[in-house]
Length: 254
Image 1 (cartoon, rainbow, N blue to C red):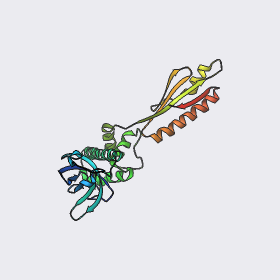
Image 2: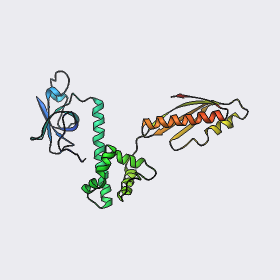
Image 3: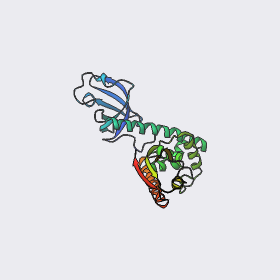
């Protein structure tokens, strides 16, 4: 992972590996900042009294700490383990792993383009990292895009980048949905319901008949906001079509 700084700032969450554990604290190396070491005092290991520090830390253990203080001249930081909750720890570890994946994928791209990794960062990766917040997010978007990716950007690197993304990145999906009750009092009610639902099933929209008069609908997207927005639009479309076809329709979330 390429960092804009070579040492962290107070308040930052960092991934560390424990290198030495003693009675009054532990020494660590910062995975994202080569050459920078840190120290976790026993008072910052856990809330309450820590009788045996090795009940919490061991050599070789990888975890997440919060930066308390920074000594830039000595390239050393004071860290806290107890000030990081489990949710923050999971998110930070996931972010760090994705950064490592992105670096390896970028190396594949640079090899395909026959340029150095540093040149790849200079030519396009730095800009992508700024645009998406992380390079891995750029790879995810490239993998999820079926049409031309980032048409506003030019460069022969785009094809190689998207090809590597599609071959190596699995897009995380979320699914939302609910149940529809649909019926019509008209003699051709079944046909009217079919007409109401015609053309709605696409790659990320699924409608299944459960049993009269119920249907299950689900929307698959890459994030909850997109899924919820899409579900709302589809239900609105079905509702309008149902009225035109004299079909009664009610929707309920699952």
